[in-house]
Length: 110
Image (cartoon, rainbow, N blue to C red; front, side, top):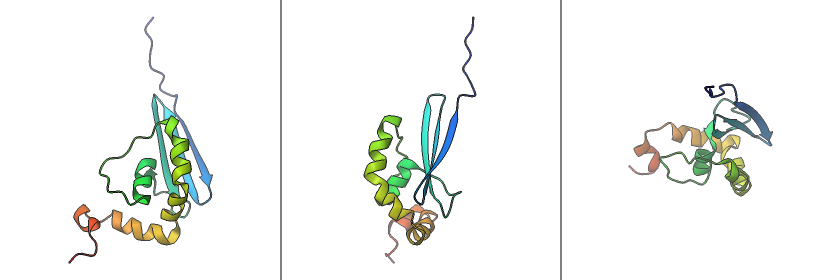
């Protein structure tokens, strides 16, 4: 008997933690976490990318998060994520993310 890959095994759950929304997607061997501020609920970022932005890290690749690492990363970065996604801070950082990379890296240079 030929075995077929189960297609409908994905689960998506959105959880609100304070002013942050976390979307968990698991299935087909994949695990993804995305995060968005509650004041901008359609502006999702990959969890690893959001941590990099919140830490002001200069990253060009998205860090893949394993399910086993999520709790540790969540607890270590929750405060930074709250600051980064706050209404005041997020509007400013959102504008910088949309600029070309060479302008966004050094906004004060002339």
